[in-house]
Image (tube, rainbow, N blue to C red):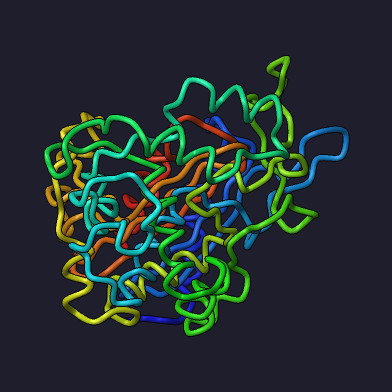
Length: 353
């Protein structure tokens, strides 16, 4: 596998394509990283970090909230811990009033039926009114884990952030440590990802500014990073760069973090039954991985994320024109969808290389 820098002609073509996409993009700025098994590594930036009278260009290597890409880290670390996937979550969190069918595996692949707190009618308004003061975990459990399930465990699929909140709690219970320390010991330190962490407090200048109207009472576009508490993401919310997420996803998919049976479990896909547009011919989900087995290039494996101030996307293709390829893109604006046209634009350049 190539691990050096790409040829300048190829990096120039990629940067020109990124700049062109940025002209039409619904975001202020963007970072991209590519690990190409034949041509090497590249990262680039386009657009702006800050708007205003003294516009600041978006630097390469900025740190972002990665939102639901965090789920892939949580799933990988649970597998590292060796928890029995078909054990009920109550084996680790006995205070929960959930049936035995709500297992670790079903929480990981969203087939457990536990309602998602992000679907609650009062969640969005609560974040908007008090962005710096999240609910307690007990409040979420009371709202989502004591009543009817969305469907009997194993008999449906629905994305559940509550499920990953419970998995994060299980990690803390089994490890006796915070989620931040457990993931650092299991994943970040071994891979040398020293600019990645689980966020635990309101940011004080480490995360690049992130813009949205979601948390503005008058729907103005504002930088929410100084006011948003990551505790509103009860699943855990990580900070990282495109380069380090690309390194993590590549290491995960190439068997450098988990044993082969564990990787096989992660990539075992269940049908979501959710229409996801032409980019995803057959959207499926594994253990902390969005999967499309019919995407081509040996299948698509990765995850997206979105929240106040950021839209993120990470994908791994095992056989992209005869080599593995990882592509990660972060945007510092809430966009409503991943930057999939950017992905297509860059893949066209890489396919011709």
